[in-house]
Amino acid sequence: MIRPLRRPAPRTLRGRLSLVALTTAALLMAMLTVVFNTVVDRHLQHQADSELGSRAAAVATTVDTSGPGVRVVETANDRLLDADVWIYTGSQLLEKPPTATADGTLTRAAGRLAARGGERCTTVEAESPRHVRLCSRPVSGRRSAATVVTALDLAPYRNSADTLLLGSLVLDAVMLVCTYALTRLAVGRALRPVRTMTDQATQWSAVGSDERFGAEGQPAELARLGASLDALLDRIRAVLRHEQQLTGELSHELRTPLTRIIVELDWWRTRPRSAAETRATHEVIAEAAQSMRTICDTLLNDARESAQNASTAPGATAVVPVLHRLVHDLDGRERVKAVIEVSDPELTAGLAPALLARIVSPLLANAVRYARSRVTVSVRRSPGGVRIDVADDGPGVPRAFVDDLFQPGRRADDDDGHDGAGLGLPLARRLARAAGGEVSHDPTYTRGARFLADLPAG
Image 1: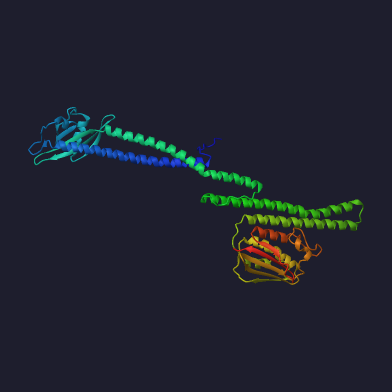
Image 2: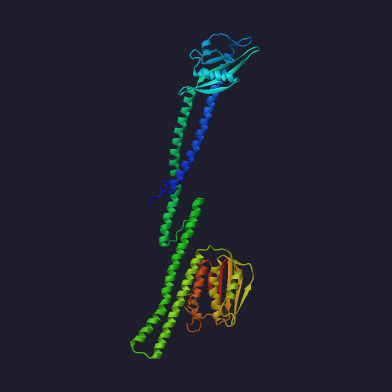
């Protein structure tokens, strides 16, 4: 199979920009060269025509047309005036240059020009590459008329035009070489900071460094590039940190149920067990396995949603509609009444709707789980942001457990009859902090438990 040929193209940005600049300069110089030489040719032709006109006017003064016939008056320096001059009366040739023949190329061209009448000019190729310019001038009298045709060799003018053309081409070549060299130099110097920033970004992303480029003292283009790289580094660092945290949480949270399974299996293997003891062991293992499954699902769902939120630019989310949807979807809403208190229905938070729901949902689920009959969700504006309070009328948080409230996998009472892996509140706090907010517990609230979610304003 024959592969199609590819046009060679520079592989570097500097080479491509230099090639574009060279091509543009070449086209521009070619146009300017054509225009310049066209103007020069017309100017030189105009000079030749002016000289021919002056000579014809001088010769016309020696032509007498006052009588019934045309007469050429002999004057001093007549040879100078007769050089390259033809005088016609009608189609009759009265006088020609001494060196010209009656049937020569120039004489025939002069005759055709005189026969056409009026003031006209034409260029004749006499002897290649010799070109001659011919111009006719009528001389009118009372009783007769004549036509003077003068000739001029264009070789000096064409030599001047060729010299100018060659000089302009040499100048174009020098300018193109200088343009290419200066463009490569300028583009290379302009891209040097970009190459440095790329190397630094690669190094920083590998180690999760806290260093950033910033926009201070940078040109506008590099400032935007630095801001983009900083955002990319922040995301990479957040991903690395999230992976490390996810790994740590999985290893930490799975250790306890795995230990229970191992202990139960070791106890069951030490000696023969009854059917009741075997069933009890199976129940413990099943409970531990279910706990492991709950922990894995919770952590992996959080990781997946965190990745989706990280790829979504934070926006302005209306808080109240999200809260109404969460309250409507709560489990156990027939036993517990949830009430939303709003001071400003137009409040917005500076984060995505999914992230807002992910932060508030564990607080609501925890409140409904422990509330006796009522959960109150209040929303109000706070200095620099939005505050969401979630309060319940349950037993509250034991004082001995307050310090461990936001530790992953910790529960105040594992035998309280409620499901859960102790991961909701830690995840809510972590997501809120990632968005520039905070989730905290209010220890001054004595009629149950109250959690505060402070979020950035939209």
